[in-house]
Image (cartoon, rainbow, N blue to C red; front, side):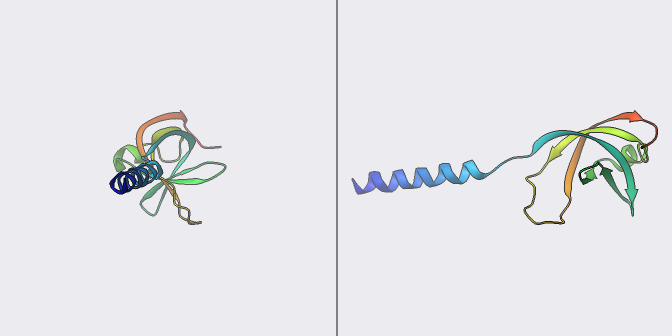
Length: 98
């Protein structure tokens, strides 16, 4: 009986731990691509995302309004740490940001 209880506790613990681990989330966001000090950012009305992707591809969209699809790691709970968006697809919406 004691072995069964220990096994049950271990299984429940594993389920709880695995349930808390979240993988990357795919998102699509529209905004303006801006190059700041060699780092590309997507400026949106609510937040700023750091874009992680091919530098040459991002450079060709600098200053343009785009729709970006990519994955976001589990966001940090710390305030002031920007969200990193790993770019998988870029689509130009307009030649200039408004």
